[in-house]
Image 1 (tube, helix red, strand yellow):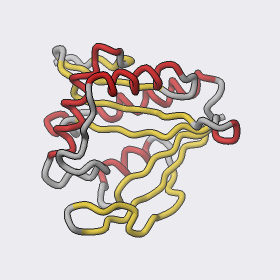
Image 2 (tube, helix red, strand yellow):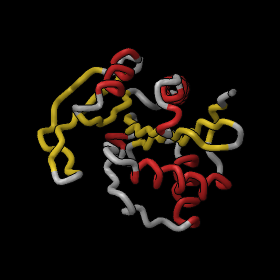
Image 3 (cartoon, helix red, strand yellow):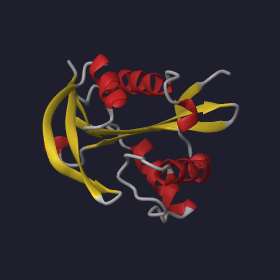
Length: 170
């Protein structure tokens, strides 16, 4: 099956909500959202999509196969002058599509986008210390661990350490 990586659009609001809800509801999910925590309306999601696409230092990408969203990557740029050169990346891939290069394709597209902005000099992300496949991918793409946040996240009745990672662009 072919995979298309494209910029999200306003018509993606409902499938985006469904995607992130499914990820949050997965047993053992290591994203910040707890199961059933997301309470966005389609209009809220459209506003979020619009804001990401309108800012020169933010973007929203989707991976799609046969019309279904199978992965999402957002880069949210700093809003103040002092952080405008920085974008914070978040990524999720549907469980049926992990380890099939979907995450890598999204990450490579995001890095290319960031380099092309002329604005972004730093991409940063946070990942749970137990997410070895994610950390491995990020390191392969040039991200470096910058610091460990002890108890950076609380989920499933336990605290999880998180790594702060960054990629500096020329």
